[in-house]
Length: 351
Image (cartoon, rainbow, N blue to C red; front, side, top):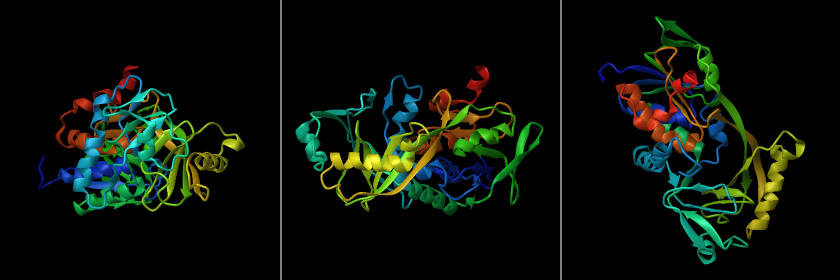
């Protein structure tokens, strides 16, 4: 690639995946413009539990990709000012979902009580994954975009994409509410909006919005040291004491809406943790995760039209660092990354 005349790359989406792509592309010398319809991290990134783990229940088509996720985040920490991951480990018990990951340890009650002393009734056994961690996904997104801007990238928020200019079956620009942005390559990293953007280019990608409930509580600090995932709760605590919890979205019944779930989860947390009596709900909302129909990320060039690369996946926070690293390499050099082979958009055409 000619670094004196960088390729013009437009990344659509300023969530954590788009931010990672922007940083990695800019670090490789590309001329990057990030376009976002709302604000930075205003989509599912802002309602993410942000647990960085490599576990998976059952066969995993992206095992190689997932295996490098933690290493990629650790590397980014050394490169991006203000990007901090809390590598405090995770405890799992009573969930029986079959998830396993490299480095898992089966520990007994005494050790569990040492790791999480506020548990009222530590289980007899739990899986401890000391290499896992969590981050503030919104702060991380801002840090990545700031680092990209320091490398020459431009970030345009509140700039909806209206369409694309196409010449000789190749995308040459992005039409926005603020005017045309010319591009040599367009990257679709708009979360649940990715399928709609691809549709404008004649590509049908089966990516659905999968709801999950995200909860935030005001809480005394020191209740949870790492991440606890059990039959009763999935919780972690930020450095300022804010407690974060995640719940499955059940249905649209009133008793299963976020506000009601927040109260129910708060009761469960109080039963499980000593000193949690004073926790109070501060936020309850639904995050819409971009979920490909087969559960495998959609990463790669669109077969229907040249000059378009797609990045849509769940879990986005887990994979953002490694996908940013690998996908940016593919985009800049044209050399395919073998770890992304199972993720190609072309698989849907074959089906």
